[in-house]
Length: 217
Ligand code: TZP
Ligand code: MG
Image (tube, rainbow, N blue to C red; front, side, top):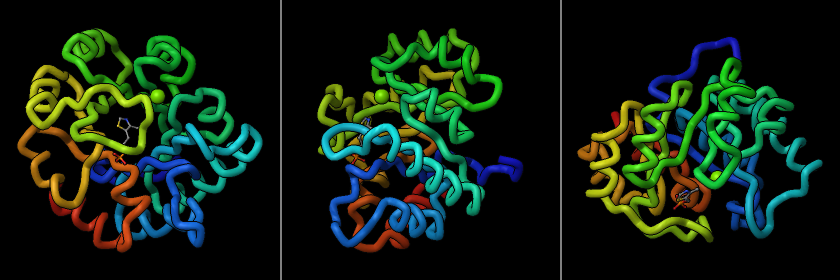
């Protein structure tokens, strides 16, 4: 990506794979286009779980989504797949605690991409603080989520606040965030909200993204 990112990029962070689009009349590129027009500040492609694409289709989809993000000058981040991130020239990569170790990801692509790490406990944040090359943390689930089968226990707003305080990197809140509860988040010190269903299943994506941008304005 040659143009500068929209900043700060964690304010309205949309995550999705084809499995997250439940409306049969909509495709992921269509949903992403609406979300980009509405002002999301980052997009993470997370093709995972039941209903997700096979490897070949995943590369094609990633290229399409990357091109859309480039058009709107929004960073394109790949979840947990260094090879795919490399192949499509992603701007960033996000890994969880159970994925490839963040230290080896940083070694492999840390020069060309920014790296995000999921940290849901104080121990994990402490380790992340000691690891150079991590750009931001994702922490949650803040609320119960239906979008991740193997989600860790809910940390709540209080848990999130503790992690944000401890972290030396910006933290994006994740998990079960809705138009109703999102207003509780800025108080925690989180830099923004990362959402799947709030946007992927929104009946009015423009309004939903506006709400995210207003809350983290
Ligand atoms: N990691 C922790 S919770 C979660 C991920 C990927 C799912 C978030 O989805 P939703 O629909 O915004 O709760
Ligand atoms: Mg993961």
